[in-house]
Amino acid sequence: TGQTGQTGEQHMLLSGQEWYTQTAIRAVNQAIGRVIRHKMDWGGILLCDDRFGGSNNQRLLSKWVQPHIASFESFGATQKA
Image 1 (tube, rainbow, N blue to C red):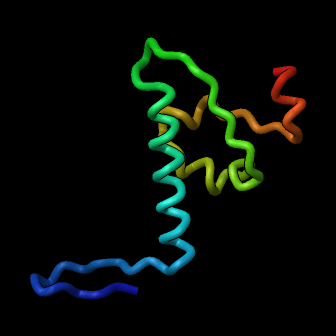
Image 2: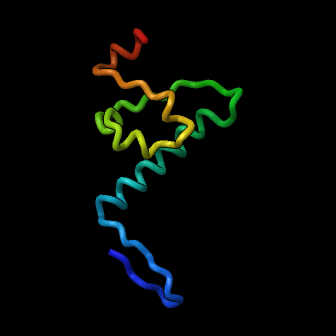
Image 3: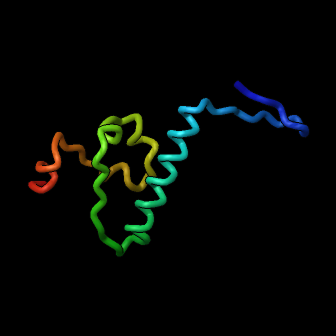
């Protein structure tokens, strides 16, 4: 739902779950940015959480990261990749 401010602009209110997800994804994106700061940097980023296996949360990650995402069924499989 929306709420109108004093100047007439429309503000969208987030549910508790939407706010929590947005805040968590922002923190993950900031952490990724601390590993890879420019195009000549290299590093490995492991998101060891089932929530990042699905496209819903993957699409919330930074656009430059999305083409490089690989999902694995187990941690051991990441070592073979």
